[in-house]
Length: 528
Image 1 (cartoon, helix red, strand yellow):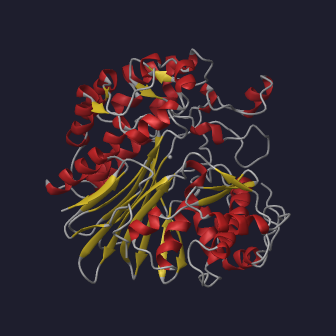
Image 2: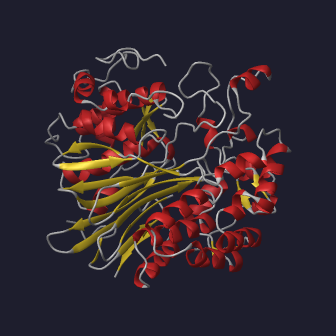
């Protein structure tokens, strides 16, 4: 239980419906949709559209999304709303230009946005309301403005040079918290989508502006690429694993949910560390498991429509038990075996929100433009920032994630869903680019191994092995950092915290919803 002498927040309790997002205005919009009879999916899309306006550094309508939707009665439904490379994006072209790697501010890092296609496809299959109604709050915020919040201003300040280089001069100088952000061009684009659906985004004036902006910078995009993107979102079969008597669900590749399942599969072979969730032993095991799982991500994760991704073998117990055996409790691995060489034959070849409605339908939804303000390239007439998800592609002939025409890149954004006995228990997610599988596995372990409530589990200090170091938040105690260093981990104190999470736990026995929202962001959970 929370110490009420200390700063912090309690979990939110309600018994009808609940939403948790990274911005209060978006959470309120989602709850309003629920109170007006909409279901969890309706509310999630309305909130995502609002976030695309008022949290512009994190998300936008020219980004991608993934969704896990769990009806109260029925299985988990997965949506891949990630876009593809242009038809002309062949490795031959890049090699002819002498390019060996993509850069994050390049038009070649911009794939066709998938979010609007996914919103429309999801609503047609499982929603009760249309985009005409659900986009009204977002249109209002774009047209009339919304105060810039502290975390948005904090992130914005890191991007001033990017915005200037990308042609977004009206987005700098950096605003202060409380300054009003108005986006009239974006409001007009949203109005067109509300009236005419996704066609108004992928065809006509809006698409023409995005294509002209990209081609002026050397991009290979065409209006035909965007027109194809209108029907690009697709339902896919989710992947799953067992952890502590629960089923954990993820979207399949090209998303990196597979990495979460690998992490949990390694960790389920260990008993919880007796010293608790912030002990050196617990964190060490988690770091080592992540080093192994992310190693395999970088070697195998790609678009399964174009290359084979061995999901079943990588998430199978035979392979994961072999990885688990590599982990010593007293020391870090000085050298890891090559990817796929532990019992697996060598292979040839970032805003989150949760909603639960009165009927118990649960929605786990993530929408992103990848890095802050995406590519920094703004189609000014349409009022949208173009994401840079294609930066994840390799320009390495033969690599599974090598760029290719109409190919989806490896993706970092992943919604999560927890079920038990066939019923949804918790839609959850942790934002933060590459950190997301690590963040999700920490959150679930905090709750299922150490008994933390949903808010405590989100609040707990985080670590992440990245680029040869262990990135530590300031909340990790100094003696624990020293113990990890003594085990052989190179510790790195970071300025920007790891991600931001939301989750809603469904207590079926008591008929209560329990929500948590990350203090690392500006948002909150609300219920009624």
